[in-house]
Image (cartoon, rainbow, N blue to C red; front, top):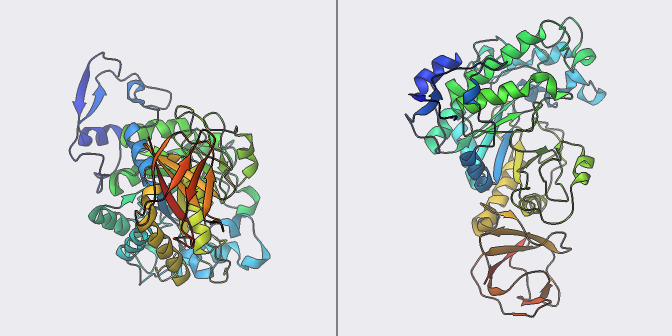
Length: 479
C-alpha cells in the first residue's frame, strides 16, 4: 500500500471489481470468512487493466508458511483419456504407435465417460492415510477438456454421461474435511480455436499460435476460467499452471496480478512465463538446493546442474516442488506396470525434503473413478512410515549435511533429523560437520542413543538392526 488513502472492500465488492462468477465455496483455513481486503480509492490502471496499487507480486508470507509446512501432496491426472489407457493430451499432440488412438477417437472419449464409482471422500481418505496434506486435481489439461462445469465451453465433464461436476464434488469434500485444495490448470488448449487453428491436426500446431489476432481472445478465455475456478470452487492453496515452451506468450504477469488480487495467499508456480513463487522440477530431484535466480521447471535435469554447491542462506533459498508419477504415466494406464516401490517413494520424499522441497506424488484414477490397488498400497505404505517419522518431514527445511553417502538430513529449529538409508554393519555411525549435540534418539520410538563428540566427529552408537527397513530416522537435538 502507498498510504494515499484506502477503503475497506469485502469479497462481494472485490468480486464485482474482478468480474468473476459466484462467491467462493471454499476458502483455505488461513483466509478468514468475511475478512476485509483493503483496496485503494484511486485506481491507476496497469496495462493489464488491474489497479496498480493492488499488485502484491511478492510471495505471500502465509501461503509460503503453509507450503513449507505441508511438504507432501497428491497430484491427480484424470479425464476421459482413462477410458483408453493412454497418457493425457499427448496422444493428439505427439502421436505414437503404442497409444493406438486417433485424434478423432481421443477427443470423443468424453461421450463414454461415466465414473459411477467416483467418491471424493475415498480419495481424501487415501491422501490422509498417505500423510498427504493437500490435493491438486487437473481442472483442464492440454487437450482442453474441463473437469469442472465451466460456463465458457461445452467440452466439459458435465456434458458426459456422468453429468456431474467432479471438481465441485472434490472441492466440497475438501472443505468439509479440511483438506487443502489447489488447482492444476493448463494454459495450452488443443480444443480452443483461438489457441490454434483447429482445422489442422493438433500435432501440427500444438505449441499454439500467438501471432494470430485470436490470441488475445484466448488469453481472455483463460482469465475467465481462472477467475471462475477461484470464485466458484474456492481460493486454492496452489495455482499450478503447466504452460508449454515459450511460456511468456501467456502474459503470466497479468495472471499473477489477478491471482494476487483475487486469492492473495495462493502459491503460484513458475510455468506461465513468470517466476512467481516456486520452481517445478518434474520426475526428478535436484542434486543441489535450489536458489533464487536459477529457474528449474520440467523434466530437463540439466537445469539443476547450474545450482551452486553448499548450503544457501534462507534468503537465497528458492521454494520448489517436484511432481512425480508412481509408474511411468500421469493418467491411468492399465498397461503400465512399472511401479516404483514403496521404499523408493519414501526415500524420494526424504530426498526432496532434505533439499527444502515439496513432493507432489501423482495418481491417475480409473475410468470408474477409483484409484488402482497398486497406488493405494504404496500410498498407505508411505503413510505408515509418516505416522512414525513425519516430524522429520513436515515443516522442515534443507538439512545442514548434504551429499551424505548413507542418507539425508532435514532440520526444524534446533532439531536435525538424520535419515539413514544404509544401516552400518558395525552399529556405529560417524558424522562430521555438526555443532555441539545435546541428545540423540530414534524418532519412531524415542529410544535414546549413546554418542561421543569431539571437535572433528560425532560418533553415534546404534542398535544392531535398523528400526525401519525403508528409512530409519535419528533426531539430533542441538545444544
